[in-house]
Structures are given as structure tokens and as C-alpha cells.
Length: 144
Image 1 (cartoon, rainbow, N blue to C red):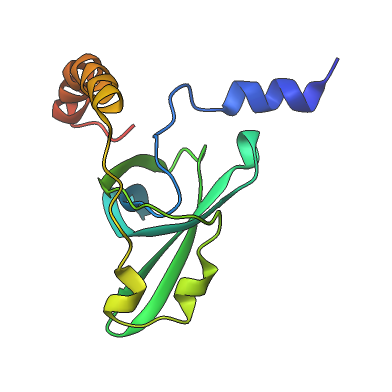
Image 2: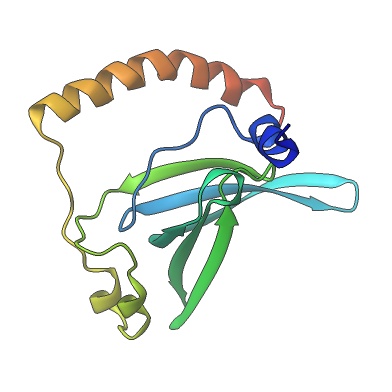
């Protein structure tokens, strides 16, 4: 009888990208301009994740020509194609809003998080399973 819950489950993505606050990521989004469709990449640091279920969002911040640019992405949006983790950051906060006040190297200097032996083996096992499927998706040429 819960209509909203049923709609949320229906529109959620089956697999979600794994990343945390403090990670440097590349966010691939689908941009539609008239009849043309292309993929745009926004790379930066994840400074916040909030919400849950279908309403879950994350904020990515980067510096462009000395100016800070932030963009909020809906995790379950059909326009969000992929989130690739470039570098994992080790942080002790859930929200990194204090980076807004920092400039230059200060803003991007977070210690890198290294995986332990067990985590590395799990990552490799998941990568081996998902790697075969990802190669087929990338080579297909379709955006969705």
C-alpha cells in the first residue's frame, strides 16, 4: 500500500558506485544539447553525501582558475552515468565544508587512504568480476 516506497524502489539504480567523502572522483554525466548527446566529466573531491534512498545526493568540489566550483549530483539520476574513484582520501569528518575556506594546495591536500591486505583482495575480486562486464558496456557505444 506504500505507493511512494514502491515508486522509489522501481526508480533506484541496481548497482551504485562505491565512494566516500574525501575521495577524488570523476563524475560522468549525460548532457543533451538539442538532438546531440554527449558525456561530460566533472572531476573533484567529494565534500558531502546526504539523504537516503532515491533522494541521496553527493557534492563534488573542484578549483577552476582559482575559483571554487561545487556541483550536487543525485545518485540515482538517469543522467549520472558513472563515478570513478581517482584517489581515496582519509578523512575524519562526514562533511568537508571547511575546504571552502582553503585555497590552492591546502584545499586538495588530504592524506591518501591505503587499503589493507584483506580489503585489497576483496577489491581485486570485485574488480575481476566487474571488469569483464564493464569492458562490454564501454565498447557498446550506447550512453545508457
